[in-house]
Image (cartoon, rainbow over all chains, first blue to last red; front, side):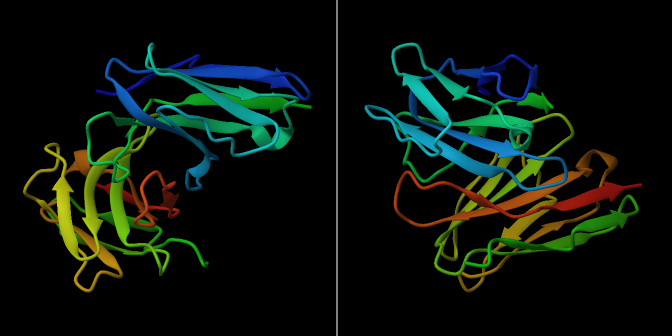
Length: 113
Length: 114
């Protein structure tokens, strides 16, 4: 079952912060975050594992609440280059952990000067 | 690391025709995945290879779809008797064998069925 992302869209001015949430109805083993710009491939941002957290970028961080099956992506001091669609991809607990991800519907982030 | 390469970038075909897409993963990556993405949606899992073995295929994938990775390097995805509902972006991704590795996506092949 597809994880649910919120909000669906965010509009920011440069320097503002944003939070994107990802919720699943299933027990999760890992949560991946990707950013996709129009016409381009999704680009990996970071991965969060059950029992731990891995940070991928300086001004972009994330948390993983295992009990609530939720993850949040935090973007601080946003830059124009942050614009794009953000996807969370989840891997269910109890699986074989080979990287099969179920992606959310995406959150469109637009940063204006 | 030259990245994941997919060809062609765009394909326009008429309903009923067969199409084949190619994916060249990052050379040292053993895992290869095919995903499909429609407008406004996240990528949807189609199938997964570990080396040359196809280990999982989505239940959503009809018998018209077939994928191969004959020598554990490049992969092909074939769609037979295409339908308008097959129009989408087909993404290939690869990753190393080690668990918890990120997926490296190619730029995709955009299929339009007229």
